[in-house]
Image (cartoon, rainbow, N blue to C red; front, top):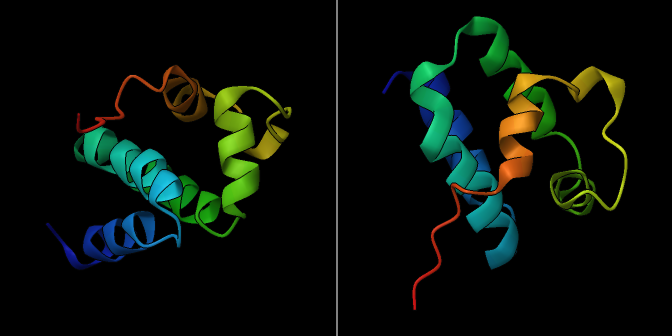
Length: 86
């Protein structure tokens, strides 16, 4: 994993709450291997947003801002990447 992806992974998995870590970090783990430079930049921009906003967009309780609309957020909204330990 290159330096940029390592930094994104750290930021995705260290959000401050377990729920946000699982959602945002889990998304990173599931999809980062297929990202190009544009998608990496988009994810980096997403990480500057608050966890409350990101989670609200993902679960559909708030509309997604136009700058984040597209395939990445469509994948995020499926939430099928979250692994919950039982």
